Length: 303
Image (cartoon, rainbow, N blue to C red):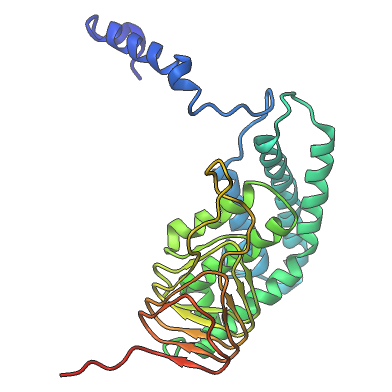
């Protein structure tokens, strides 16, 4: 590795000026994050390790060590989850510190809060597994190309996205800052499926193909729903404060009741309801309520 002494004399002054400009408050203050003194940022690398370990715990044999013996599973699972708990607690604490306005190194209430959130999350793992098993079942039953539920766990981007979402949503409901969004964006970058951790998704959900799907923060999706690639469950124009800033936390995304199917390329916007059993055809643009059992599709082309 080159040191400053190895740099050509004509280059060193230029680099020194660049460093000086990058450290100038006018430049630095726009990107500098004033987290608590001495507090580390959340780590995407650590979160990847946590997610890999959780995938191994939820789906034994599918991820991590492929050979799983029932007689030693309890031992390996206990060691795995002990590591997950301590790493996750640290990342949750870093998330709290990242969003904390107090500038001090030790924050006892946040440390206690991170411990409680991590324990509550660990307690939810059996329920997360139950939901994901239902998602795998829905993928198998909903796709004639799938040979088994296990194939969908190994191969389908839908299952990888939902693995991340079920975990991120649980942390989101525990009011953990930052970490749920980081987890959801990890799945987004690898699958092309963008699910905000705030979205509430019911049992046996299947996203077929998946690329380009967007599900917004305040979406509510019922049981046994199915959507295809390129579907957007988004918002219309955003309400604003008098000063022009966006109003946060307002329900602004669609509600899909049970047994709804939305085909490829459809866009459903605003706080509207698609009734139970409805089918929305491909490339439709929906901004109003859809009655239960309705079939919405484009008119056939005329020659």
